[in-house]
Length: 562
Image 1 (cartoon, rainbow, N blue to C red):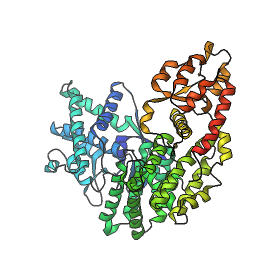
Image 2 (tube, rainbow, N blue to C red):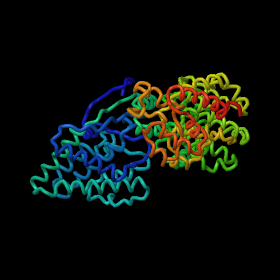
Image 3 (spheres, one colour):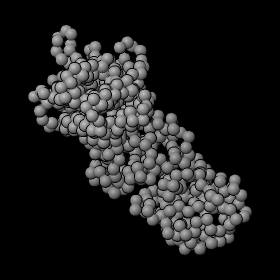
């Protein structure tokens, strides 16, 4: 492999036939479930049945490893499962005494002889945990005693199960045919797998390029491959402490996987690195890890940091997490509001820094501030890149112990957080398209109007009972003769036009004239809702005036001082 990025278009079977490939030693194990294996075989079957000359299987990424054999950075599951299918076809020919065809498939696609050592070596070498089992259970011919190797680890059981599914699939393919036709049918499958089931082979010179390529492709499924690259780099320095290093990585992964958030490891690494080194783009994560972990001691130290912060990171996604036991109910509420109601992610690196470094007392103050700041940024808008950078800088300051209190953090952010005047002006004109945000804003304002000491927190159970009603409907039609469609389009989603109602009442009033809506509005127990029933009519002036009043209340509901 040269230093340039290269592309090649080839059948996945021919890719196995023309290359020796290896999965990096510490990359994740074989992980496909039954459904994934069946989906691949079904896709092949459908393409063949419909006489499709080609079927696209996606991209396979190869990087240059320490030796001459390319490493599979992404695509090992497809390559391994395709190998399992070809081995099942080989097994059929072998058991039916067609040894020439069995040998042809084996030497072309499964195993070859190393000319230097004369050893039989696999065309695809799996990772350190799976390779020996794969060689014996899949690549060895059916008469070998090696085939009886027991499947004990989970990945071995999945390999064995994939082999059973592939063998049954071969039997199902052949069931309708006589002996002569069976051979031709299987050869048709071999030809399709070799040349028709096509992949784009992306060859990159090193793991850094592979990591950045995955980030550029923006494919959620590639996050796991990025995590594998990072794991391989860290474990490559472990040497005699490999067991300890693997344990730290596994402990981190176990904590994060409990969230059920999919491939979250790279996001965690990204946010942790921000707390350590400030503004960092996700595509820079691998390079930053290489800088931090460039020796055995530093790699183990980084893995320790990784493991130590995982619990704090997981707690940011779960207001019921045991970490918050000593922080009290208020902090749990603020975590829930950020996740459930506001659904903001930009602030997470800063939240992680606070969770890891602040005292409980100071963190309690800050998490309440985070709710207010987030609302202000959502309403004012337009500060994406600037906000990311400042959150990252402050997260680094906290990680470096330069900021230790809520007061110090507020002072550092004061020029970035929208002021009361700016927030009030923006709120007085704001349109809100997302229902969950509109419901949260109005419910919090309602609580403030009633004197609640923590109006920024809204009980979770209320979502199913409270709906948003637009006093001026989206399509006013004849019931609203004084409102033209253009005006309705502009004012429909203004906060001043929205009220909260019990779900049952909301479903009843719909697009009714305002005179009829007033009955339900006036009967509401929500103060800010019932107030709108005092008007004889509802239009632009009423919406503007109400929204100005709500804007003043918003400044008090989400203050920038703790």
